[in-house]
Image (cartoon, rainbow, N blue to C red; front, side, top):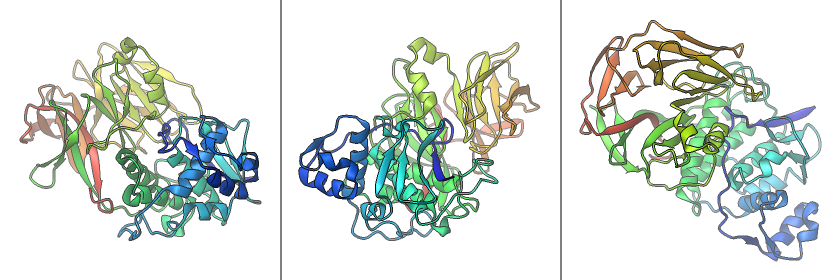
Length: 452
C-alpha cells in the first residue's frame, strides 16, 4: 500500500509553471556528482547536460535546485510555526540520505504527482510533475515532502477544514515535523531567506507556505498575521487598507493591467479587463511576474478566445470545489477527483458577481451572488458534492461591484469607485483618501515572520 501521495487537483493543489533557470546547462562535474547518487543518470555523468524540457531534464533541474539554491547564513526560526529551521541545513543532503532512486511512472491516478511506499528508498514521480507546467521550486518542495515519509511520517484523513474527508491530505500537527511540515518550511525558507531567486518566486513561496500551514494540519498551525483589504486604484496602484487603524492606507506597488482579482488560497490571480491578455498570478509589491499557470481554471480560460473570456464574470476557487459565474448561469465543479461540471441557470435576472459576505473561505460550502435585479442568491456545493443555486433572504440597499468581508468588517465597492461598510441591510460610506478612485478590492493578509 502507498505510504503517501501528493494531491494536486483542480481546487486543491498549486499548479504552477516553469521558471527559467539561471543557467541552461549543468556542468560535467555536477552531472558526475548527481550520477554518483542516482545511477539512472550514469550515462550522462561524463559530459555537460543542457536542459531540453524532457522528463529527465526536469528531474535534473529539480535536483540542481536542491543542490544550488543559496540561503542566508543566519536563518532564525519564526516566532510562530512557519519556520523552525529543522530541515534548513542542506536540502540535497537530506534528500539523498533518504531517496536512492527516482522512478518515473508511465501513468498515475488523476491528481497524483509523486509518492513513496512504506518500504525501500525509491520515490515514484508521475508524468504530470515532470512537465513545464511545474517549476523546479515546487518539485523540490514535493521531493523533500516525499523524502520525509521515509523517516516514518504517514498522513491522515482530514476530519475538518478545507480538506475535510480527503484521505492522506493532512498531518496531525505541524510540530510533529511530518511531510507537510517539510512542505511549509521549504516554502517559508525560500520566501524569507533565499538569496538568489526572483522576487516573484519568493512572493509565490510566501503564499504557498501559508496556504499549506492553513490547510494541511488537523491542529491549525500558528501563523502571525493581520487581515487587510487590498485596493487597486484606477491609476494601477496597489494599496493595503487596515480597517483596524482608522482606515489607514499603505502604498504597495503597481499592477501592469487593471482587472478582476480572484483569490486562490493565499495567492492572487488577475483576470485583466483587456480580454486579449491572459489571466496570471499577480504580486502586489513590484515583485514582477513568473511564467506560470494559476490552476486548471486559468489554463482553460487562457485557451479561450477574447470573446469567450469576456463571458466569465467571476470565479470562486475553494479547496474542494470551483464555481464559474456567467451572466445567466453558474458552472460548478463539485468533485475534486472528477473533471465533471454542471450548470445551474439564473431565472429572470443576470449575475453581477460574487459577494463574500462571510469572507473568502476555502473550506466554506456557501457563497452569495449579486444580480442585476437586486436579488441575492446563495450558491455552492454541498458536502455530498451537489451544486445549489437559490434565492436568499439577504438584501442590499444599493448596487455593488464587489463585496468582501475582512476581519469583522464587510466592505462593498460601488461601480463609482467608493467603499461602503455593510451592516445587515444598511451601508454607510467608508471614507478613504482614494474615494472615487478605487477600481478593485480583494482580501489580503500580512505576516509577522515575513515582515510585510
